[in-house]
Image (cartoon, rainbow, N blue to C red; front, side):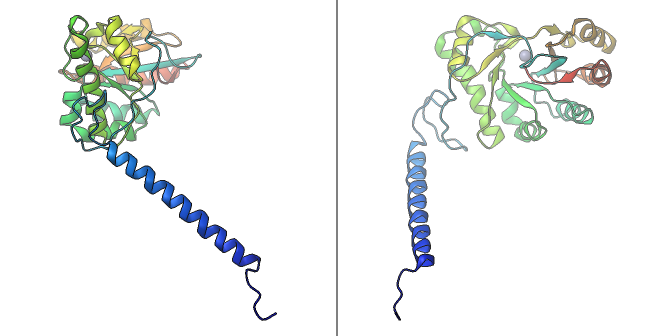
Length: 260
Ligand SMILES: [Zn+2]
């Protein structure tokens, strides 16, 4: 009885060792497969150019209809900010939102996201959502070829991934100037992005004065509303000032800030 081999504790140790080996091998094979996929052409990266982020599977397709309401019922309002990120206004808007425990969706241009990746990361770190507003804000996008539309839409999506420095969800696409077409919505939907419209236009981009922006939102807002505002594309002092008035007002009216 001196050689009591493979008592229960040893059996368990062997089982654990074998299980560990199997797990490590599985992960190693998966990692090799992923790394060999880098450089393969994808919809997001048609030429298979090396990017600073690993290759990512295209998100599953979504419905191609245009969204104009919040993602849940009740007294919820979704604020959306277009044409950023902007080094002057985006941080101020983020601070105001955080002060009020509010969230919003940022429809960013790929060109600006590339210039200010730290702002894309800040927007994500504050719990906000990203929306692809194309690479270059071509307002006539709907009239372009399928190839050009794909380049603008998926180029914007790719710019956001690179700026974020990791794989990030981009659940929405907003056509420049709201010029949707079946084609732009179809390209976005195929790549996992819902076309995002709005139900309240603050018209802040016309620089009508803070009070007019505030009045337009107060007048138009209702449960489920999606509000169009801008954090980039020009002088946005009026938008920032309007937001400082609107956030406490919305909360006092019993609204919660949410997502489309
Ligand atoms: Zn825009």
